Amino acid sequence: MKELGIQGRIKRRYIATTNSRHNNKIYPNLIKDKELTGINQVWCADITYIRILNGFVYLSAIIDIYSRKIVGYAIGRTLSSELAIAALSMAIATRNTDNLIHHSDQGIQYTCKDYIQILKDNNIRISMSGKGNPYDNTFAESFFKTLKQEEVYLWQYETFSDVVERVPYFILDVYNKKRLHSSLGYRPPEECERLLVKNGSRECMVC
Image (cartoon, rainbow, N blue to C red; front, side, top):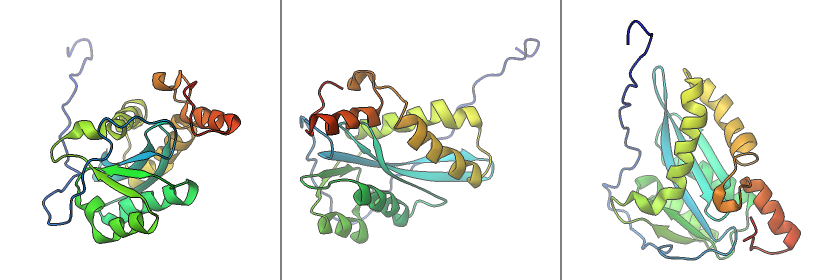
């Protein structure tokens, strides 16, 4: 390997982003076996970490499960509730929240008083995964995997500024506008949603 200049892939240390050791109220899972027919029916929220030279940067994201579009995101240096609230506020400001379900894990960021109050103030129903069950949040996890494999690991971010500069570009200009999804008929999320507007319906099964 030394003669050929080959290096083994280093196993990256797992960083937990979910702290479910709290006494906040836990809400039932409302999306299990739920069949979706259009956008703004279920949003899925989650947080991941991005490694830089001197530590970690955290990304909070909200994805519309039907169109796979990232509708809200925020980047920060800590796993604070403000990070999750910033992503939620961005999503609410640009989307229709009528008859919407917000789904997340049981992390303290999503069960804290301020976050729950924003959901209630906007008449958004609250849904949470079972404890220790990551399969309920597969859509957000799939996005994070795509982000890291197609962007983060290729650029090898070194500073917080690198993350702030590159991640929004990937989300808004690459993932939402260009990234094809087999579940959407090999169309990107924004094209799928444009078809919804064109058809005058929330449904877009042709995507």
